[in-house]
Image: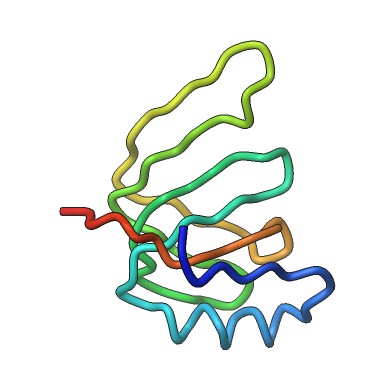
Length: 90
């Protein structure tokens, strides 16, 4: 990951503004529980972001799992870290 931003106690409005600037960019988002979402931000709405063409990776635990989904909505309050992805996603 490059251009990584860590948000300790950022207000949701500020986080939404930062994420809004990343619309149409490939990002990697880590949420509470350690789940990693890699995909393109297509929208920032109210208290959530929408990613498309998403690869989801579990936090590890007993088994590491990765799967693909077309779209996912992520609540801003659950985001621990977000950064621009250096990978090109098609």
